[in-house]
Image (tube, rainbow, N blue to C red; front, side, top):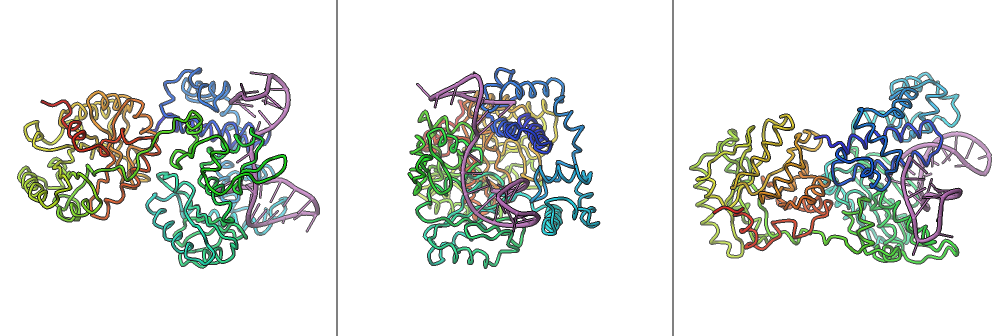
Length: 574
DNA sequence: GCCGTTTTCGGCCCGACTGTTTTCAGTCG
């Protein structure tokens, strides 16, 4: 379901870009960019809001609220149509080329009539850029190189890919003599679901050796920019990594700055300005005297702004500053709070590890309970049968004796069919300790049908958790189209939890949907959906996503003591 | 275009690096 928030955000971003290309008031363009972040990060669906409610969103004033209203009413916005008519779409696309921004794109369009990437490449080959002011031979090379990179589509990568790479680089740089601290920052530290580039931060009195060690890493494909304090490289696989080295005493301010997000940083810097201070990656300074006030730790930086420390996963300018000012930041769920995994597979269906190995790995993680939830018969390719399922249950019960500290639960992952029915009737389902139910087919049903299908699953008294609720695969399959408000209401009403599937290519529900569902009073289960012993650790990404959705321990059923969990799983059954 | 415990007008985040130019604009994060 393409949320209307995302549609509107894309439209406002286009307008902001076009305003930047046409020149004029750059603060106007910035105001639209601010509104883009506000709309994209808004917790609910903005389609249902009236003008007054739209204006209540910080960063959305009369003009933008009216444009959003006009868009919902007519499907287009006149002011945007007018500027579209003047600036060909291809001119905006030029901005996607690294090193090309709105000014250069506008100049190419104005001086040479270039309005597409193809025309630009052609113009370079015919040496037509030589006469344009500000464009030299290096710029030509940079553009051609940038276009080549775009064609290779070195897009965003999944969080686990970036995390593995970042941890490898951090380990390498931390070992360099003179490097006192090293960590990853940026969107990775905020646990965004995909990562565009990796930000590494190091502290050293003398940056030289750390910079050299970075440039010499085996994974470096090319050095994009190499300065004294900052170096950017592209790995052999095409991912950009930026390293910043700061003096040790500036660590806290630098970490705060390089963690972002951009929106969060703008807010904190504005707060500093209003207090007669200046906040940069080197610290908080007194504007009058230029004296450094604090810089060593993030806690000090936030405290000087009158705020408690804000967890990185909240730093998206989605209300965390206001919550911090009221001292109402949520106490976020952490990986340590997770007492068990409630969605896992074995080699009885499509897993690759045995029941024994999966349980041993769960026990080694210190879990208090663990559910085995292999696929049910309707997912025919998994070749499940009643007999096999019952035999596995026996095995689980026998295995339980070997793990006195770990309670084993026998469950299943049911298949929600096109009508909302599941694999078994009540008699057989009653034998399970818990049931996950998920959509695995008919992904493209119309909205009403899909909504009814999911709500029916919730209404089944044996369904405890809706697995990967939108069934999206990041970068490969879009989310199903359903009325999420209705689904969330049904979950809250029936005592059905929504899964936060931790598998890095799912992360489903995603952060914004979690925030939205939480407003309805829904409970969640953070599960790994493991198909191998190595997958259990992926729960960290589900926890990070849950944090981005502002969840506390109490919101997540698999942080609860077993007795409370079991009560929830009875779901009001007799 | 948005916003307001100094403001309904006059502000609007900050710094590194590059390429071009000779003191700086543009881009990026």
